Image (cartoon, rainbow, N blue to C red):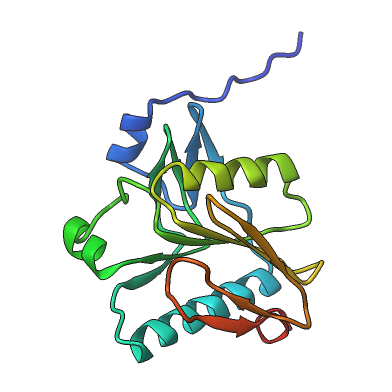
Length: 178
């Protein structure tokens, strides 16, 4: 007789009290973040650098984070790249888990990600305090910038621009994804 182990179910509060690295909490289940490819890591590093450089050059303040846990609507997520305003940095200080979504988030979409899950995650972020989400599609060479009010697709020949957060920021899609 074949038996299978049931995945361990823990509460969100238990997870937030002692979060595990590279894990998200979704509907009682621990979900391990996929191993990233070199391309994923390169794009993540480039976007982090671009947001950070712009933030510093514009004297906007705040902080840019990578793979840092935040709480969403009844879940805990770990966005690839995220920005927090100076006011929220002061408000939350040195947090273990940000108690809301970051205000600006980028997720780098892998070929194995399911579209329904990716867009559900965007909706979740936007319902939890996020003002703008960038979905980066390396294989299709697109960047989809989404807010609660609009969605704009930028292609390889275009320059992607923030819509709400980090006003005035832009980056060549080709430069980011090359």
